[in-house]
Image (cartoon, rainbow, N blue to C red; front, top):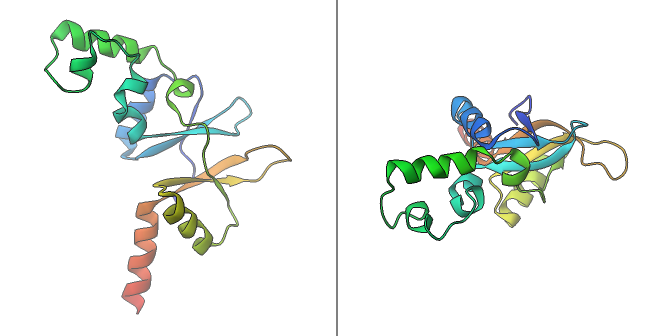
Amino acid sequence: MSAPAITVSEGTSAPEVARLMEDRNIGAVIVVDREGQLAGLITESDFTGIGRVVPFSLRLAPVIFGARPGSLAELQEIYQRASKLDAAAVMTGDVRSVSEDAPVGEVIHAMLQSDLKHVPVVRAAGAGRRGTPVGMIARHDVLKLAAGKLARG
């Protein structure tokens, strides 16, 4: 697990989230609500699903989907539209998380079963709460675990 959890608030702008992910060289960031509870997850895939991140426009569709290069004005318009979005608009809200005391095998099984690349780790809160993020488990963490076990024989 990578800890501490790297989080953004629901109101953080999409460009700020993208910069954070790039600066930290991470593939996902946890979105928290006002109480610091897990609200969602933003992954690189959420940004590459550009039709979701940039409000759709038939005029811009060929540029967004790579059918033709965009003019400077079109690229500026796409950036301007994207810059108005916040984390809540980009995130996936229905996120599978695990508690900090979950067995490693259970987490790996869940990742494989649901084809998850990132799983937030939360400290459980009261009933009906999603928990406070304490870290993130990524496929890379599973690979490091496997490499260590294989090296030890």
